[in-house]
Length: 228
Ligand SMILES: Cc1cc2nc3c(=O)[nH]c(=O)nc-3n(C[C@H](O)[C@H](O)[C@H](O)COP(=O)(O)O)c2cc1C
Image 1 (cartoon, protein in one colour):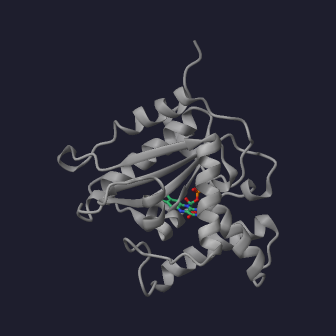
Image 2: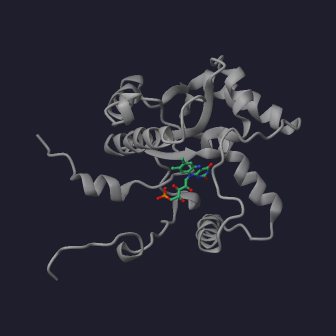
């Protein structure tokens, strides 16, 4: 039996993928990934994350309906705040860098608003991934539950990676949360947190041809009490 790759290799290999091969992902694989995501810890074991996974015609219908509504001027809502307003300079610099890396890889000029918008709109097609997931939590949850949700989400992304699949979180989906909630027949308390694209990476695609960087260990962690 071949030993699975070490955890660190799986974590290092994961990246956000924005172009996929059309190859379908078997239901059993998606179910296994969600079963693994389910192992994530949560405060008081509340397990706030809920997931709707779509593929094939239901996924196409979902995206088509959403895109038509957006083209028709669907209102943007902010069910929860994501980015600080105003954004502190040091965070803004990271945000700009993340965007610039993507648009440079795609050969899109910083000033080409149309091309940038076209790329942004691909969020709402799950970047043409064969599997699109909409993730929700109960809107009555406290802020802390976003930690629980995040742990489940990262476990999901890494479980996908371990299955040889690529992924991308899509916070942009939350911009149209109420519309999506209606589309998918959610309960009144279900709040759309994000989408997740899942599929096999198109390794030739320029959109996937870059890696984001990270701040150094010294910038985010301090170590006390060790002899050096
Ligand atoms: C919860 C969440 C939401 C995200 N939303 C989007 C999104 O709407 N559109 C997008 O292109 N990338 C999105 N991303 C991807 C981030 O931009 C990406 O994780 C970050 O730049 C780090 O790059 P990496 O994932 O390749 O390591 C999201 C990631 C997460 C975890």
